[in-house]
Structures are given as C-alpha cells and as structure tokens.
Length: 182
Ligand SMILES: O=C([C@H](O)CO)[C@H](O)[C@H](O)COP(=O)(O)O
Image 1 (cartoon, rainbow, N blue to C red):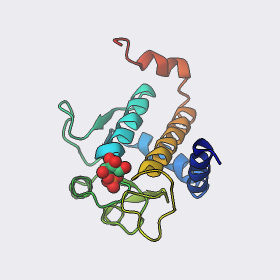
Image 2 (image 1 turned 120 degrees about the vertical axis):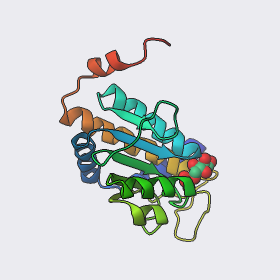
Image 3 (image 1 turned 180 degrees about the vertical axis):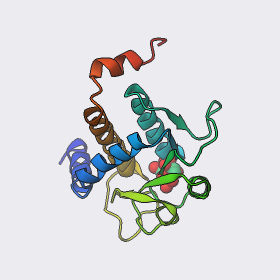
Image 4 (image 1 turned 60 degrees about the vertical axis):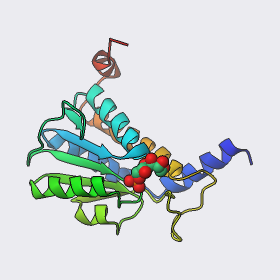
C-alpha cells in the first residue's frame, strides 16, 4: 500500500467512529451562543485557528484565545478546546477557567476520560493516535499526533458545512468575508 493510501485508510478508520449527528448538533450549539472562542497548542492550535477562520467566513463572531485582539469571554459564549491528548495544561486550564465563568465548553480530544474531557460541557471524541501512543490508541504510520490533526481538521470542516447549511450561508457570502488584503 502507498503512504497516501495508508493515511487515507487511517483517516477513514477514525472518522467512521465519529457520529455526524453530533457534528450537526455542535453546529447548532455554536450558533446559539453569542461568540465562539477556540484554543489549542501546537498543531492542535493550528487546527483551532483554521476552524475559527472558516467560522468567521460563515458569519460567526469568533476569537482565538491568546491573540492580541481577543476580548474577555462571558457566560453566553462558547469555548472550543482542542487537545489530542486532552492533558495539555494551558488548554485544560483555559477550559476550566471558561467553565468557572459560566461558559459552555466543548472538548475535542482522543481521550474521553482525559482532564480536558472531564471539565467539558460536551465532548467530541476523535479516536486517533496522539504523540503519546498509548496502548488503547489506534496504530498510525505517521509521526506524533498527525492523524488526530488531520481528523480534527475534517471534523471541523464538517461542522462548518453543517453551520453553513443550517444558517443558509451561501458560499458567495463566505467568499465576501474572506480577506481581500492577500
Ligand atoms: O503540536 C503538537 C504535536 O506536534 C503533536 O502532533 C500538538 O498539537 C501539541 O503538542 C499539543 O498537544 P495536544 O494538546 O495533545 O494536542
């Protein structure tokens, strides 16, 4: 099997275990909140930023935690916290802080019994392998948490597609919101 084919098989194996109804419900939940905040470290953080960018194109008010112009969070906002391992301290701490401020928090992780999952209002479990390669984790030919990152990216794009459909956002409207300074 080629590397490309192996990676596609890995992604398929993981995503076949993620329920699309959960992603539809997540899109509804995101719309029901005033603002969306996202957080993640490293490559999980890059996935978080890409999710935030597309949500912005779709008309959401969305911020990346830690960026210079990100305002304070409030009880009617939602935090999406991404961590493959579910134990990266800054992400867990932020989720705990948001929860203590009354926010709804969504954990996106491989481990539904991780500290991040334990603090979350709801969990999207993506059963991929992480950099820790724990016994229960799916095998992957790829280094570190690449499989989690890829699957998280597709999960986020599926949520965005649901969000666009549910709110009747035309792709042309999304394109108008895209940066015109590049
Ligand atoms: O950047 C990362 C690393 O390359 C693993 O693929 C991780 O995303 C980063 O270390 C954060 O870890 P998690 O919170 O477990 O996603």
